[in-house]
Amino acid sequence: MRGREASVLILFHTTTEAMAMEAACGRDGLPGRLIPIPSFVSAGCGFGWKAPEEKRELLLNYMRENGLSYEREGVYEL
Image (cartoon, rainbow, N blue to C red):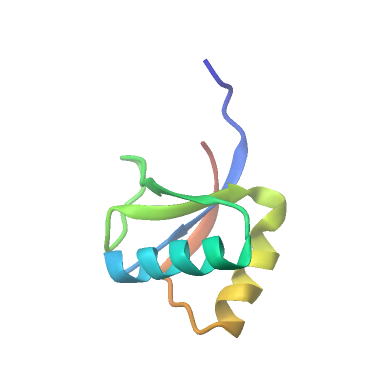
């Protein structure tokens, strides 16, 4: 069993926003993956982008520069 580690979790209003993030990050080689959000987190859609905590600013800047929308983000033990 893997231990939990601090990760940034970016939450989305819609599944369309989540899938746009997945496509953009895959295309441009950014870290992370789309996951079903844990039950202790609520968001507009059921998916979030999980990445290492130290990549938080990189991802948020990338999203701003590329017009990618999100609901909110936070650091969680996942």
